[in-house]
Length: 413
Length: 102
Image 1: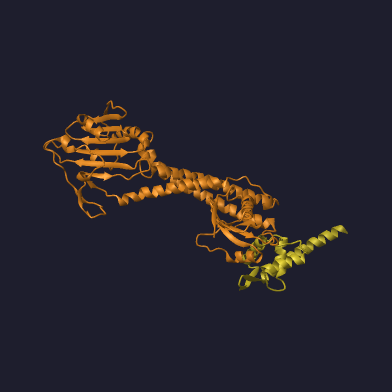
Image 2: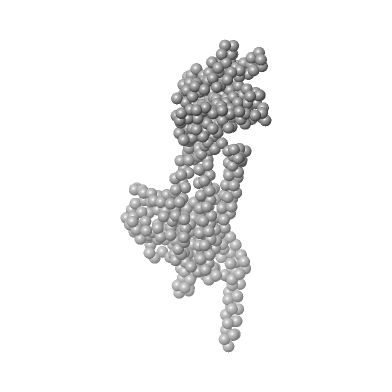
């Protein structure tokens, strides 16, 4: 059986338009096989004049097709063809003598009015769900307002895809509203005695629904991929196995007398290394790739507390985002380093919330290089961007990061 | 509609009438209405299915047999009562009109 696919030129709820289009397709030898609002499947056969009629029939998830209805229609020469979004059934006949499906406009208008009411209820339920989704999505952003680290959010897994999926949901909501209005208008005209075949409805094109689906489908896949990837990458990698870039070494900054603080943890290697133990205090953690940043790493190095009670530690966050994001990302990273989150214990320890910070910028050809420091606590952070990559080095210890700016920039080469 | 105790529409009236003298299936009901009214009342499958479903729901009709694709319907005492009430209403309408003409 030869199949072909067509985008409906009218909305699902432009019933007369849809019926006319299906009949025109049949005249070209294309018979509807499966109806999707954004892409219909047709089978090829000999062209024959065919009448199509669409009947409202809302079906619950666990409900079967109404066999008694299909049988009665068949008795009158009308065959069931397909279902539209579990709310309508498509019938067709090639018998020129088969009676019209509806011979009483009042009864017909009551059927469409029922469907319009259900569509209105669905619209409000869907709007409420969308509002919850929007709140869920926007609430974390409000926490940063007005200093929203936009670039940081853009490289966060799920944010980019989630945002566009929300946009497509909003577009679908608008489409749902217009569909409800189209059905209501159709039922009112039937009530006024205008037969369906004589109606002409201004409705959104089916191309809009196709576009929404075409955008949404790959984004949903991307979102799922972004959530699935963490299950397939190891959580910790020993520093000596790390090859993505050469991280600045805490041992070399601190010099003689430096001793690592160790915290051995099991890893999630899926190969022959099995459950090899890794020192989580001195390790590399791959970040979940996101649409705008496929490669990102966090390198943690932690030393033992020295005789002066000083706890040396360094956290390097390294990103390889899409080129234009690198510099703004470095600036946002530096800005956010002043106000770490509750889970950033290693960096937050000893930080004074209200103590002042100083900031210095250094010249870097074609890039960005800046340092912030909280003099009262000795916390230092350097952000740099070069060659489309960005890095943030957060350090606390007895030395000065100003002496290691070249090594920091080298991590971006 | 019967639910509202309002007058029956013409298609409703003829659906009930078609079953007064015996059980009939869908196409037989439609044929009866068309023949009886000289083609004035025609019942398409959409209209007939909706009316049958409502009458079944209201207990005015019942299904008696399912043979292959065919379902046969029978009028219930409630349906007969509804038909007679509509007939009485129509008679009153007719006599009102005739009295005014005299």
